[in-house]
Image (cartoon, rainbow, N blue to C red):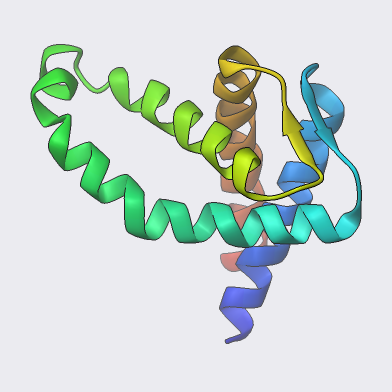
Length: 114
């Protein structure tokens, strides 16, 4: 349970940073950041594997680069679900998810390896 809360906090903090770095991504409150971190985790756990499986031929042809576009689209989908988290288009979602992934990976290395 503690590891779940730590990972949720890392993702929420990463989303907060992304909202300040990427133009086109806005967060209205801390509650929205916590909600989007939870929704994004659920989407990545349930919907992402199914979409990756369905688009496997395209992923093979593009050597996995298409997965970046899938991640951006799921990030945009999560913004449509949670009120108070606004992404203005696909490209801010694309770059936002890449930066989110990098930040959350680095923070996970620092906190979960200790």
